[in-house]
Image 1 (cartoon, rainbow, N blue to C red):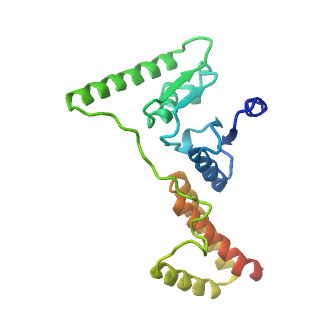
Image 2 (image 1 turned 135 degrees about the vertical axis):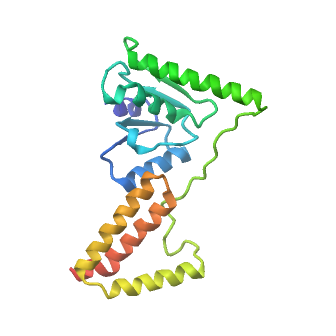
Image 3 (image 1 turned 30 degrees about the vertical axis):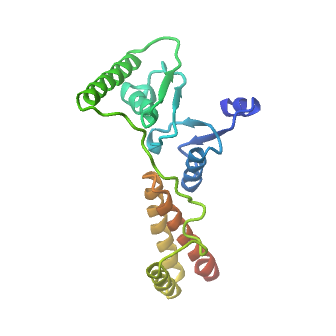
Length: 211
């Protein structure tokens, strides 16, 4: 409902939750970094590993609803999603300040105070984190630039797939999917895309024709 409300009022918004497909989740994160939309509405995103310098505001709704997702540790982790941005801030929406909220606020303030003191003592000027936005839609496609070594490796893998049975191909795809999920979880977008395209090639060239 929040996503629909924001969209109806002219906000460029997307929705992300823990059940969204891994590849789609990576693409959503990439689009956020590229400025394709400005608001990401999320449900249970602690495990997503969102660590992007473009996130300048984190708004936590129902912050006073006690539970795992609103424990002091979870709140600290969620608040930290804005820590990579120099102007990052977090707003906790609640009707009352719970013990978990207060502990999270106190811990965040303690860390900030220590960081400021350290910076001043060592004459450090804070700088924003810079992370390249990998184009997960293009990486790994035949038209993308590759070195001779990568071409040779691809040809060797293709020959191996041609000798596999349907069962072996299915097992290989399952293995590659696990690798892709791990890369996506680690926000290694280009690696995730390369594995995704490898899976696509196996299915198109061998697996579909073998079953």
